[in-house]
Image 1 (cartoon, rainbow, N blue to C red):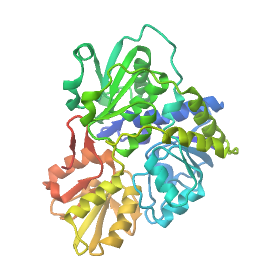
Image 2 (image 1 turned 135 degrees about the vertical axis):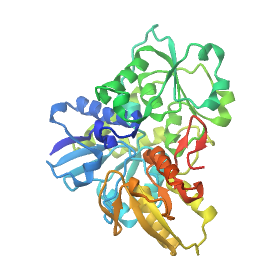
Image 3 (image 1 turned 60 degrees about the vertical axis):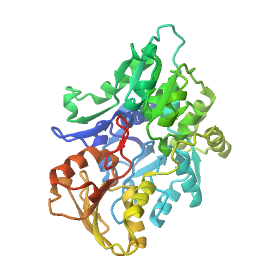
Image 4 (image 1 turned 90 degrees about the vertical axis):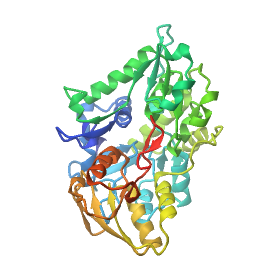
Length: 433
């Protein structure tokens, strides 16, 4: 049995010359897996790197694959994230649905215990009787604490919402360095040599070497920086459930709390818990027995926190259902389409079939997969035609900007589609609202 990782570069299913949404926080999670393997003594040259779009059809050597990313796929009628040649080890999974089908329950039960990133995922799996524990993201444990130094003199603002600007003290704002951890377009415009991994590592190394304070709306800026011992202020216009576990490590401020921000936070050190998370992950990847007390200990570490009432205790699937209920009733008769095959799409299909029997799935769009989803062959999004009146659920948040471009070009009105969960943090708006 060999070890594998999701290919850093092809996580976005990159096609030269085309636009993609790049959230470098996704890549840093995969770099954290590389760091874990290094601690285990696994030679990077021996790793099998598999593009995310190929996980369900991978046919190479049998391999163990740690899962520490919000990444879910279905094979259409057979819910499964990976091929039979991959043994997934769920270290920190985030589910964006609390409506699990029998196939979902069976799949996760086969690979227990399931490490959960956030409390809502943990509670969802427990409610279905699936053995699990709350682990947070391993980016909060893999980055070593930096040395004490007087050279940390810069404040970095990383993708901060515009609504925060008026609250930033002048002595912080005037010398702050602006950064972004995402990019939409042809990545070659930003990284001409296509060394995306190097580009990302340089950004995090800049923070590690120079930051006296990091203010950010990005979970995977806050998490690695906290692990390094950098003081962090995590701010959000909208606080989804995926941020809840971070409350244990750094304060999470929603927009209505910006006036009460502590602008002089101290670094947080939790080295014992970081070691425990590393040990659990290592033993699980080596298929060694894990002490249940250790799993319960790290679960209690994240559960025993002062909870912020401003963090939304729902997931993307629940948001989609709330939207549906405001405009549909049980007798609604229409055709709908799904864009993006993932666990939200899977749950949505079954939920609509059971609760809206007159709603019919007409089309399925997926940029990176050509399969049948419940009997319907996927199409590429650009194949969508102007006179298609089907209501479109965009279930892949990474497709949000591309979807808006497609819908604008087709002249689709905002009451004819819904993009689950995607918010423009900078401008405080839902992209389809």
